[in-house]
Amino acid sequence: MNRIAVGAAALALALGSALGLPSAAETRPDEVAATCPAALPPGPKAAAGALSAITREQPRVYPGPEYRTYQVTGLASLVPELWAPGGIEPYRGIAARRCGEEVANRSWVIYVFFPKLASSASLSQGIAFAARTSRGWI
Image 1 (cartoon, helix red, strand yellow):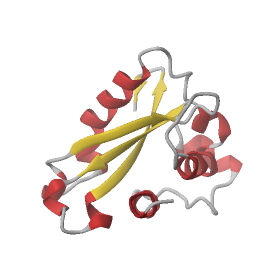
Image 2: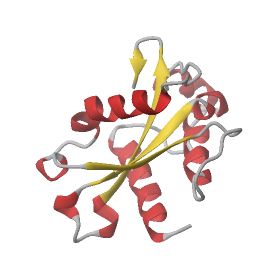
Image 3: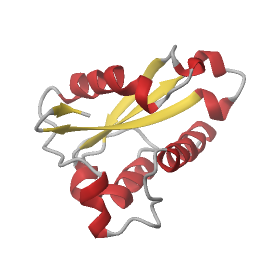
Image 4: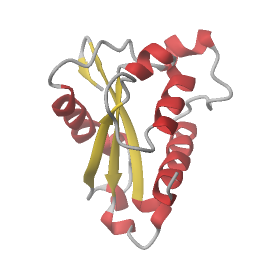
């Protein structure tokens, strides 16, 4: 795994902790329903839906003035049958441990760059997970 992927995975774990989500090791099946979305299959417009979710949710997920300016640098489906770029497995693993295989297999990971934090490789790279629900993408 490259340094950016390691940093992004660490940030995802830290972000989950900051939001009060259980760590991957702490997640129990009875906690999954309370903290995770009821994900639907992604559908043919999944990439656009995932992008709409990060655009809408970014200020809440990444609060603070240093995170206001950002660029989406990539996104990938966590659906196991689909082609995905190398290095995606750790993110599928994080999603599966936190929310179960079904939610993970219906989710997307979004890579985000924060230019105001460019001097720090670990802080300038972020990730978010998105899933389609009955209320839209979150």
